[in-house]
Image (cartoon, rainbow, N blue to C red):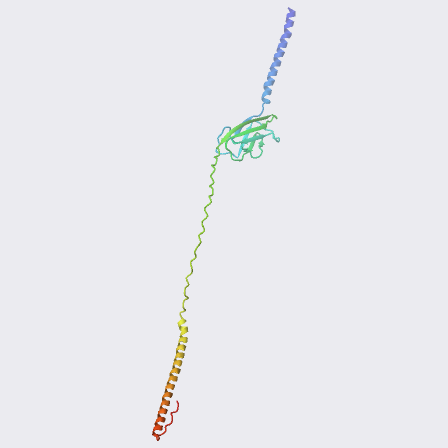
Length: 234
């Protein structure tokens, strides 16, 4: 009997010690698990799957803990449905927030790929998307084809022959010619007077000569007839 009792006591002690060790180990795991959990994405602005009227100026990602600010630790890629890059510059990390400026003309679904380094030094990544209106594709306008216009036939232009016009006679031309007319008339009068005088003188001489001849003939016939003197010329 004493031998069996001594044998059971060490077995119970070993079982109790093993149970206590298992409980302590499980408790340590349960306590350590929350402490070693990684940071995670809490919210985004714009929200995931949101539909916007236009592309916002920036987007913001908020995490559960502060993020590492080492160069290259945070990366964001923002593209639209056509694959165009919409990120403007590098992302800005401040505490638990990451801000990324946007630029460009977005079209359709905008996809955001992100990668950050959490406060425990472990990198985490993910993605989300939101939508903007699809940009309308402009319809190409047909450019009118220039058609060559027919060259106008060259028609010779007949210039009218100017009609000679008589130079107007000055109003005072008659007055200017009047002295010449008067002078001409006077000259004609003088010439006419001279001709009349010469003809008259000649006729008178002829009469006187005839009268003289007649007197001479009478004197010769009568013998005693007085001798008349020839008339003196005037």
